[in-house]
Image (cartoon, rainbow, N blue to C red; front, side):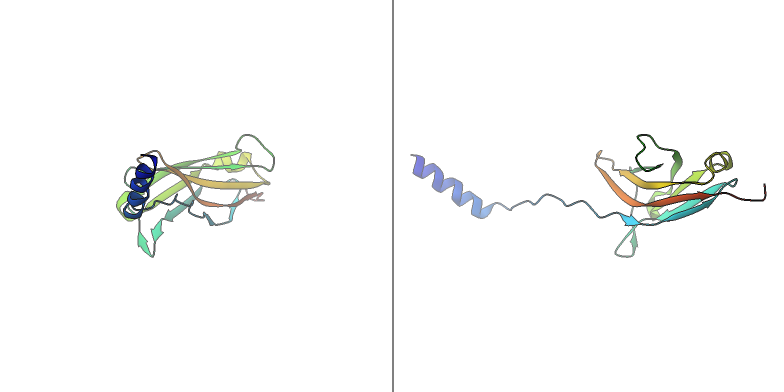
Length: 134
């Protein structure tokens, strides 16, 4: 009986497709330089093989942390501006850039799909440099 069961399992294994776990998509690296005391806006279009992705049902979050810090020093306002054409926007206010003058750290953009699945799309360094003219 055990041999028959083993034979059936092996036979089924030959006909059932194998599923591999999805490897995480590598995040694109993009480094950002921001001038203090000004509003900052970053517009991005997500594409696959040159074709804009449909972002319907997806949300985005962008934060930056200083080296070794537990909490972010920058929380960007994040928007999907045109889901059908893959367009997103990330903003910092003038007050935020002014209050974080001469600061640096790393950031990433996290995407949450309609199914709750999370992946990181963009990462890099962010630096806010001081300005002379106010």
